[in-house]
Amino acid sequence: MIQASVLPGDVIVSNVKGKQNPIRISKGLQMNSTNVITTLPGDIEKRNNDTILLHATQQTYYPAINDCIVGIIVDRRGADGYVVDINSFRQAFLPTTAFSGATRRNQAAIPIGTAIYARVLQPDVHIDPVLTCTLKDGTAGAFGVQHGGAVFRCDTAFSKSLASPKNTFLPEIGARIPFEIASGENGMVWINSHNPRSILEVWESISAHRT
Image (cartoon, rainbow, N blue to C red):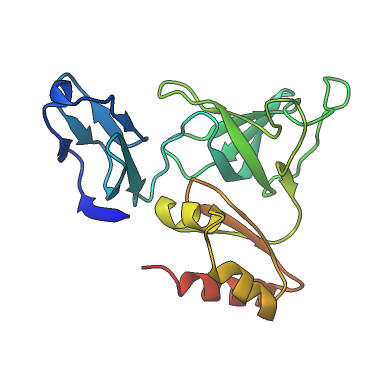
């Protein structure tokens, strides 16, 4: 349950050492020796007495390991990989071998402008984040190249809500207009339908649920 809207620097919990149970926090929160404070704007959700989640509302995405994201291939980086726009302060790197079954001799060839659904493998504030289009066991799962369609941008909290199994309005839209969707944790959403007009209609219907 959302309990409050916060800004960076707000104190969420004070006197951490005095708490009986350890406190678990999400990305966007920071714990020092005394307090739990916010590092991003968003909405606070407290679960039980020991878990605090921040549903960030920032437009710029801050990568974290194992985040599922949508990206756009914007350039080739030598023979080893691709530069990917992930709606962050840095572009990401996707190795050509970061696909199920790919090897140095059998590499993925992806045109510039193609959308991908990927997982953050190595986030780093000093170098470009590294992506992979595989699960931890090396299989593809839902990751990979997204053929056709279009990518739309929104705040990160909304894109996360679209990927939630608790989402109720996407099936309702799909009953009217058949479509495919891949929604990342990075404020980027890929949508495909049978023609460009339908794609726009789907996004307009989705956007009507933004608060």
